[in-house]
Length: 407
Image 1 (cartoon, helix red, strand yellow):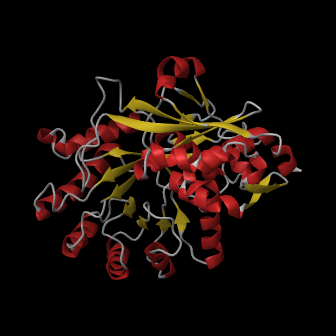
Image 2 (cartoon, helix red, strand yellow; image 1 turned 180 degrees about the horizontal axis):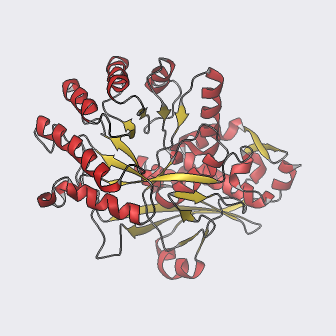
Image 3 (cartoon, one colour; image 1 turned 90 degrees about the horizontal axis):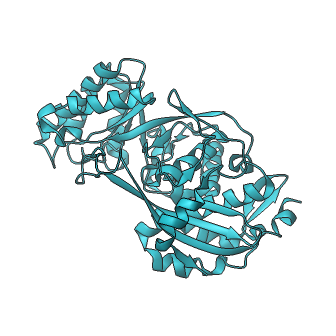
């Protein structure tokens, strides 16, 4: 019955449009600083709004930024041509309101462009008048905890403040409602002398913990900044003993030998801390699966918009069937607003879900009032699809002139 209902909704238009916002107000926004590998992230963030519209007047939304990063608008234009004229029923098998399989014809395209899957789930949910999460399963939680992931090397934005520069912004994040914060670490080797960088990493965690108190979760992410310096990594893990760090992410580039040492140090010095990794890959047939099978990875975190709903759902199912205890904690930083909403929908129906990555950005173009944020968590909407719309008047006035149509 579900697929027959979807037959009447045929894709008639696909557009991609750049949409920007700022970390704070334009002209007065804060600078998000460096990480272990890169210069300052900057003042602003851009999404590439993907709109997939049907002849019945429905529009599904997503963020095409992963596709733009990989190949750009020409690749999207060429690869999405075949979407035009396709009924919604052609992409997935939907039975009793659940997506049960993917059409092999579209599997490679959706695997390559996971963000397209998000727009399709949005459309299917709208057509069936069901929330996106319900296409995967029953709701297992009504609120999704999130963490502020914008606390970079703020001590290098305002060097005179040292580690307190990070603590100040951490307190500001807590004042705005976040109850979990991720601190960028990995200072040894590029921006600091290695030993000084290790000391500053530990100091930042200590200073933030003192500033925000014991009830706020602290996560750390080194962007592989301890590569080649396992001696310093051991020193860091020893240094955060007693600071109640929720997880350590990307401490070194993934390999079994180094991760076994990291696990041993974790078990010795800070046994409550999770080891997480895998944001850049899809999980299967990768080093992350090997790490998981050897008990070296507590959560795996492929990017939400690289994966899309269906392939992430299948990954979680495969982990479940493997008998491993590994959880899923989707990466979302470059996905900003729409990726976060997809993350929330996915987490609502996924028992292994841990927490949502929140780049804390609002885009004035988007309207999603049911995603109420309070005490560090977002409500899960029950409205159809992603429960996000766009301000059409604003779009026509400001953004449409930058639109690329795939017709």
